Length: 78
Length: 132
Image 1 (cartoon, rainbow over the protein chains, first blue to last red):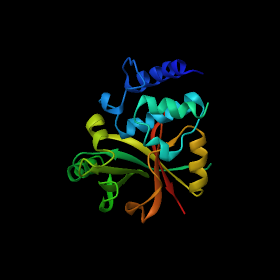
Image 2 (cartoon, rainbow over the protein chains, first blue to last red):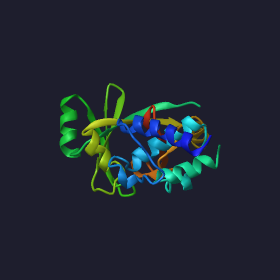
Image 3 (cartoon, each protein chain N blue to C red):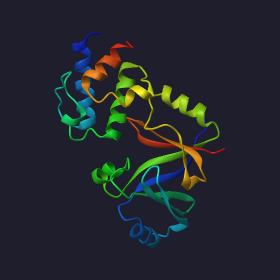
């Protein structure tokens, strides 16, 4: 799975969680999305883990506050 | 994995006034209001017909539920399950798509027994309580 395919899947996940059509880029950060707070972050992580059938390290989860970082961590496991 | 429902967590903005309203519905207060300085919340338990609710009220914006209550208002927001196999259950749920919000910590409201909050994107938030 390449970066574009990962981004497309993340677009679907983010759109579902935030109930809004999202167009993400690798530069999108949590501060760019008003409702991306600490609890929504864990909800996103749970959805990403389910979708990609992976599990993130708890220490990594706190640092995954940008789409680029999330893509990087997904790529490490698929 | 043997999980037993312990209580339903209920966010309230004004815990003293909420207690009075729940009493009108027939709930009885169990114990006193406890201030959990780790989670920045005030907590108390009330029961009715064998069901237990936990009223949770953030006392400042550092609480993890401070933003949640702004979004949800006064509302139920988690179900707490107790288990005799705390670590094993966490591992099992983690493998099944539940993600820990934080590491397990002692909770003053439960006599310093360990609790952990987890989220699944399809289920929402749950709490696990170490029953041992």
